[in-house]
Amino acid sequence: MRERALIHVAGPQNAGKTTLIEQVLRAFDGLVLAARCVRDDSLRRSREAAPKRHPELSRYREAGAIEAAFFTFPGSDINSDEFYMTRLMEGYSQAVVLEGDCPLSFVDLRVYVAPPLEAGGSLLVRRKRDRAKEERKKAIAMEQLLREPDGVARWLKQMIGGPAAAFAQGSPELLEETRAGLLAALEKVRKAPPRAATEHWAIAEGYGGIEHAQVVVVNVRGDSERQGVSRLLSDLDRLRKNKEILDDVLGWRGKKTPITAVAADLADSKNQGTKKAVTRVKRSWRKS
Image (cartoon, rainbow, N blue to C red; front, side):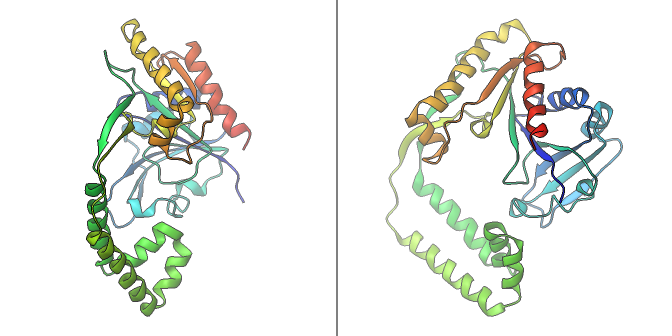
């Protein structure tokens, strides 16, 4: 059984994710695989490609990745074996770095590369939550899925894994019984009194996913961004230390584990923040 660290690097477009990965690859002399991952729910099945001239894949290879691939997947394949079955993952490595959307429910380290906050901006905002609208939207999507010929099997695969779904597919009666039960439950939800709207703490638009990171790297490209960096780091500290904010953003199971947060000029390999971020990422796979 192969043991290797899985590192997921997320963040908004042009934040500096690929630049951070380049710095990590150049600083590590071991065997590392790299994948650019994109979720596309219009797909029925995951796809893998390794074009020689893909801009990001070329940057991975030039920085030191032994192999690189582009992986596109539907949401139904999250936490499935599809990524592990790719040609990329057939090769031996000490670590795998994934950039973009994550096709796995578990990774060894979640890294988020963020731009500084804009003037007057805040990472933590108050929002009204229309719970009735959310539940209607989920019910409609669920009903559409269940009415598709393979919808129940796809739902089972997403919820409890491929083997259970494969077992259920061998029993049409079980699939239909499951479909009928789920549709009946959706009908009860539809007839129930609508839930009242609530106000809660949330992550500002453009920074979604930062709340799940274990390492946050704020990419600083100039002195004019220093104030935005300071406010972002302060808000990250509040997110972990303020119970009300933590519960609203991450739910009651949210962990108070401190985030390693650094400000770094990722274009500069000698920058102290860049060195700290790279060292933290490397440490995660040396322990694996």
